[in-house]
Image (cartoon, rainbow, N blue to C red; front, side):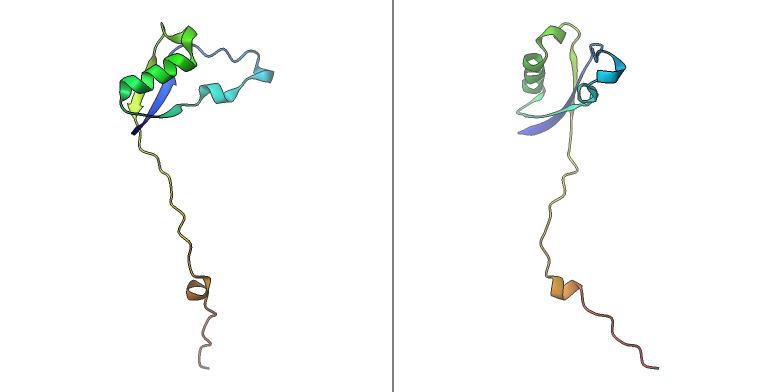
Length: 83
């Protein structure tokens, strides 16, 4: 599986400014076998926008893996300096 960033080419219908849903303006990060499979997912999410189309770009996340650490090893008290 590969990750793709997909965006919508159609004009966004946010409604009025007060009730605008900003999430529709964000890219969609889709896990798929290839670009065509990612496009197919976008087509199923937004069937009314198929004619306007979508853009699909390969994407590599900046996901960070959290590794537990030994607090005793890294949080040692300062050693006193000789006077």
